[in-house]
Image (cartoon, rainbow, N blue to C red; front, side, top):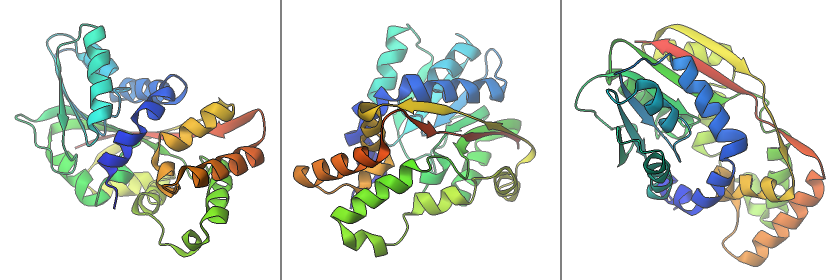
Length: 264
């Protein structure tokens, strides 16, 4: 069975092609919502290729520190290359599980962009993140809203099911189940409260991302969607042709998101 780290190692180059249109704007939005200050210590979990890591390091300045954690070594390498190109030396990159990572000192803020639902046990993982914060420290997260990625996901799944009928009755993946638990402001607020956070502020962020055929397929290959693809290339090609044929031209991805900031 492919692990999350292995999946995103394979997806890394495709993931990064989505950065200008999707990951970078939302990473900047999460950092802005976190209200970071100079000289603070920040933990960025599920950091990907650095969409929130880099702006966080810029916000806390040369006197601050950012620990960036992800399970994908390939994504971490991309993030580290960006930091090096910008001459930022205040970031420590670590291949580690966010659900068990422990810093040497409490953090002023913990960031997590579209990563909570990938944790093995989302509630236990978020409680662990809370334990990494100093008293009064902030958690800033982004997640998809309830109707995000529709009808993109429906059309893609149908193309996969036609190629692999046995998948229709397969159990729903854990990330999908956990995502539903935090996909509305009310659900996200209740979830964070149950994990020990308070004073939660949630903003609904409307975002439409234009996708031509090439970028639409990059979204499949660069995210968890790729887990539905068969190993054989011929099967992948048939799914690609079927999916892009139903997606049509001038498609816009519904990337509506929630950004929450809560205090410990």
